[in-house]
Image (cartoon, rainbow, N blue to C red; front, side, top):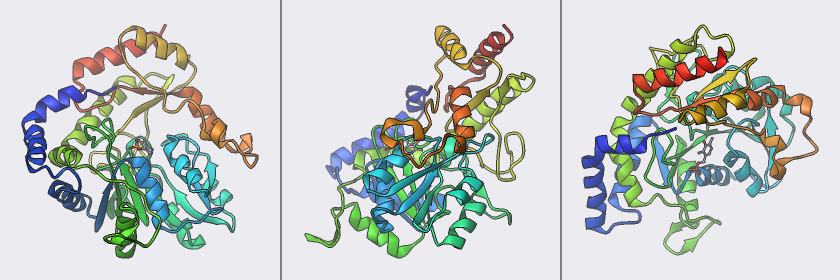
Length: 380
Ligand SMILES: *Cc1c(COP(=O)(O)O)cnc(C)c1O
C-alpha cells in the first residue's frame, strides 16, 4: 500500500544527516530539532501554534482536554472513520455521538450533525477523511449557532487546502478551534516511528495545551492541571523536518496517481471513483490542493467487493478496506441511542469501499497493472 523504502532512498542523505545531528548533540527529548520542526510546520500551515506530541491519538485527546470538555459532554463525530477519534472521546468520559457520512466524499454529513445536537452537545469533530476536508463552512456555521467547539481530526489531510465559499483558503487542521494530526509512518507526512501534533490559532489554548503535554506543568515542578506525558522525540522531529519541504511534492505525486486511476476507471460503471467536495469540481482539482489522497478509495457497485480484494491479493496487489465495520457497530461503542436507520450511508460504504495502493513512489506502469487487473476482474 505504501513504499516507504523507495521514498527513503530518495531523501536518505538529508534524513541521515538530520538524525545524526540529533545523536551527536544527544538532545533526544525536547531538543532544538523539535522546536525547528514546530516553527517550520507553523510557517507551512500558516497557523500560530503547533504543539508537537507523541502520536495522533494523543493529539486528539489533548485537544479535548485543552478545551476543558467535561464528563457527560456530548461530542459529535463521524461513524465512518478510524476508531482513534471515538476512542479518545470515550476515554475522557465524554459521550460520543456518532453520525452518518456523505456517500460522495465520505465525510461527516451536515444534516446528521444538526439532527444530533442536544443541549449537552459541546463539540464537533470532523475527520478530514482520506485527504479532503469536511464541509467546514457549514460546520463552522452550526458551531457558531450552537456555541460548540470544532476539533479537526486532520490525521489524513495534512497539506490539503480548504476553499471557503468566499474563495479564501486555509490549510486543513487550522480552521476549527483546534486541529490534531498524526505522523504515523504511512500518513502523508510520516515519521520513522510515532508522532503527532496539535494546531491552533488561539494563544490561550496553545498555552494550556503546552502544559498538558508536559504533565500539566507551566512552571517546573508546579503541576497546575492533570496532564499527560506526550512528546515528539527529537529523532522523529529530525526526520519530519527533513521531509516537510517535500510534502507538497509528495501530495502532488499522490494527486497524479489519483488522476491516472480516475482516468482508467472513467467508463467502468461498477466503479465509483472518489469525488471532490466543497465546490472543487468533479475531477482532480488543478487549482487547489483540496484533496491530498491519503487513501484512494473506490466504491464497487454491482460487483463483488470481497472477491475483488481476494483477486487483487492473488495478483500481488495490496489493497485495503477502510473501514470494514461502522463505529456504531463496534463492540466498544455500541449504544442504545443509535438507530440503524440513521446510518444508511456508512452501512452501505463498509460493503462497497476498497482502497488501492497510494503513495509517492507509484509509477505509471504499476498503476496500469493495477487498473488493468481490476477492470479485467469487473468485466469477467
Ligand atoms: C491515523 C489516525 C489517527 C491516529 O493517529 P496515531 O498517530 O496512529 O495515533 C486518528 N485519526 C485518524 C482519522 C487517523 O487516520
